Length: 116
Image (cartoon, rainbow, N blue to C red; front, side, top):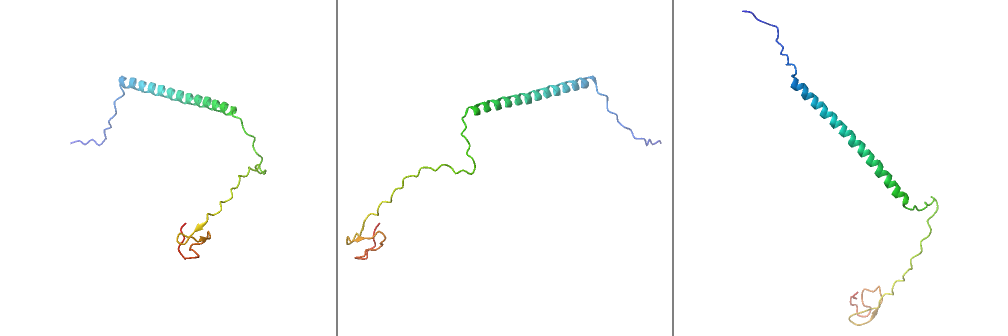
């Protein structure tokens, strides 16, 4: 009886020619996608730069108001006409007809609660 104590190591097969051709197509696809990505980013940058210059031209057409200096108060606004409050309507007692003052809550003649 003989015992072999040396471990056996399995070696992977060498890549076949079909696999090598497959690697070429993967590399080609990666290069194509990379070029497309760079072209997309470049196109976006060009579009951004053009839209930026157009908006600056449009803004330059808008007339600008002169800026006010700090420390100077703004010019006074015209005062709105003040409307005098209407004189309070005369209040009369609904029971006896006696005239009452605007602040009265009860009739000074008969004591009835005044309606407003």
